[in-house]
Length: 128
Image (tube, rainbow, N blue to C red; front, side, top):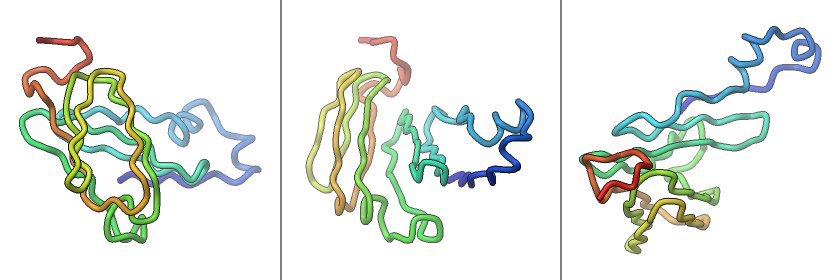
């Protein structure tokens, strides 16, 4: 998980466009077969993506970064499926996700994983 810290107010006012992009633009998401996350201290938020292809992807916690044994131990999640159909398993509950479906996962859910319904199509092209 990439961690981004907020620049101080004096440094922020003197940043170049490249420095602003480096500190605030998130353009590393959506890697095939991976869960990618960016933790921003500016908003105290985690922005992430999961792009399962042939195998399920588990959402794991980094104990050092999140101070938690599992990802939703101390936080809630909102998920929007902007890709193809798939499934999210939360503990023992299965949620079928069509394109543009949303799912709320409450604090305390231990196991979270993502699976694609069509491992040959990982985009939002609505393949059959």
